[in-house]
Length: 428
Image 1 (cartoon, rainbow, N blue to C red):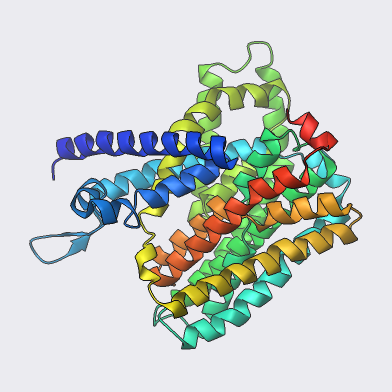
Image 2 (cartoon, rainbow, N blue to C red):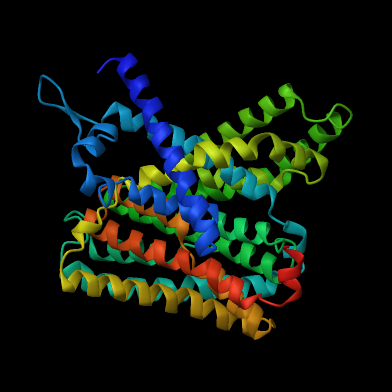
């Protein structure tokens, strides 16, 4: 396949991806009350083997070729067409997580650190324990984990997967409804960010065990801590000085280019250390000074990222999802069990923790619904698990179904819980 052929196919791939995401988003928002992120998740699954692959398998395989290319000497290499899509999707993901960091209210979180800590602990401990216990049964009963994975590694991975919260989607729902600056909105954002940080550390330990290298976990955890400390104590003052220097002229092409350079470097560093690029992007956004500077950065980057780059990631994840693999009553029973564990361990536990933290039942239930959604972050950790040979396509599909269902639940539940309240009025 020549470079010219790759470019031609890429243009058609992007046309199909963007068109499908737009149609599903319009229908989903109008008739189901879902956010763009949820609709794009569904669109991704539809373009994969679960729907398009059933309707037109030859066209689906030609447009999104998952099979590797076999060279003349018998070597298997990833299909370059999909490698290009993957690279583009990661760029969109990094910029989007940076934008989420820009919306993170660190000042408000400081005033409610105890409540956020309680909520975060509940969102980590309960789903992790339930997921770890379930993993031992899955490990010995069925084709869910790859043979090289040890039982304790399987427990850590499934526990981490259950701990994940759809942090970008959570932030987007709060932002769209005007709740990002509220007390319970900040609690949910703060707890979700900590939960996901812990989950990435657990994932680093799992990868270290699978690759039989303790240095992977040490590098990931140590590198992550050093990066956060550097960003807070050195990066933030430098960024403040930079924003003062550019205050008169505002954000121009040179300023935006420099911020993108810094963003790409931070993404590269955290990716190299093993905690992945999105962590570096989010932290950079969180320490960037607020005000006109942040608003202009968001204004120049948000539209293209959310409308063009980010949908590619959802479609790429959907191409790995094969619902047909869940083809027996036993596997559907496992799927229902996973969903029940997810809701009980995350949604219910966080709701009770929020109540103990002093929120009323309505706000506590809203926080539980927000924290229960897995969405984008779950897809990321599942794709890593599949690519690194930790889980099988069967467990990947089951977990994607859980992620979609728990994410689909969030928007209708929140709309119902906030109906006829001051929060609903603030978002209209």
